[in-house]
Image (cartoon, rainbow, N blue to C red; front, side, top):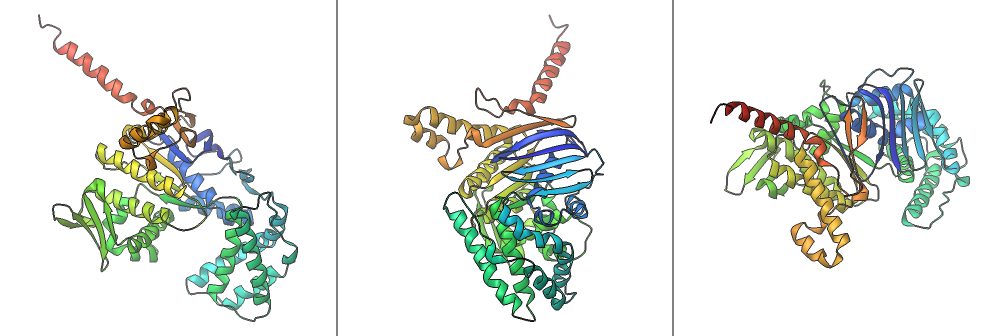
Length: 444
């Protein structure tokens, strides 16, 4: 089970929620839903924290997501993923490594990573000495006996086999490192990635793909995207990271059809062109705000759910409905869910849109109907394609208010409670009726 507990951080007073496969956070502006979504992204991408328990690294990660609120003595954050836990308490970070064999292997990394991480960063930026970094690696691998490290799994499944293979690779690499006086940056970084792979696969952390509400900015400067990522521009790192994912996705999917926009995206000669069915075409930078918002989103989701790897991703998408007409919102939700189902990834959405909730609820009801009446499965599939169905048990939906949150799920009817976000429609209707009564009060 995956969950997070937060107390006294930014707009959050006290929140505890379970993270399922598909998660929806709703609530008014500044209610804290984005803060929670970003915190989950931070802790799911927390390899550095696992290794170091370094409070300064935590502060840097929070700053990357623009949630660098003060952490007080009474601030408490705990993230859990199965047996793994990471906790912030009394302005300290505490990580939990329950597997004895792995804990023994990781201990030297915990000691060396505060020095190793900036050295790697400097080397990537063209500074520092490979020999200096290599000396630290030699020190690191010499601190423990790799031959005594084994991964014990109760089941002999593919995951366990992969873990054993990775450990064997590291054991083989030890001899290569200790018998040479110099190593390339590529080999060194590859070695560190092998160790990261063990931790992430063991705890099923996967990669978190954060898709910010500011994604429209990337469309507006799409032709200058590479420059944005490679220059020290005052913009949140999480936005730059998404820019890098967009850059990679548009090269991989240089022709991509978006049926619900009746358009095709094409990337050629560093130009981003939208081709419409009627023959018209326009640069992405000059397209409508809705298209500018949705193109980076769909390209990254498509590219990162088409991968061939065992690790699960978790997509954190802020306000997918931005600048989109209701029918397009519906089809975008279906697009995202279909891809998430295909890759067996996780999804977190923050939204203000009742159309997003209702669209997701329809996909849940399709699954419900097929379960309750198996004989009607084919008819249900004609109404809603089976690859878009959503099992109610895979879903969570939380309403944020006054620094807390509550689940909106209707367990009896197996819905997500979309009416929680659409109460304003009822209020508007009442006001309209009252005004009509006043208008015609003296009409006989």
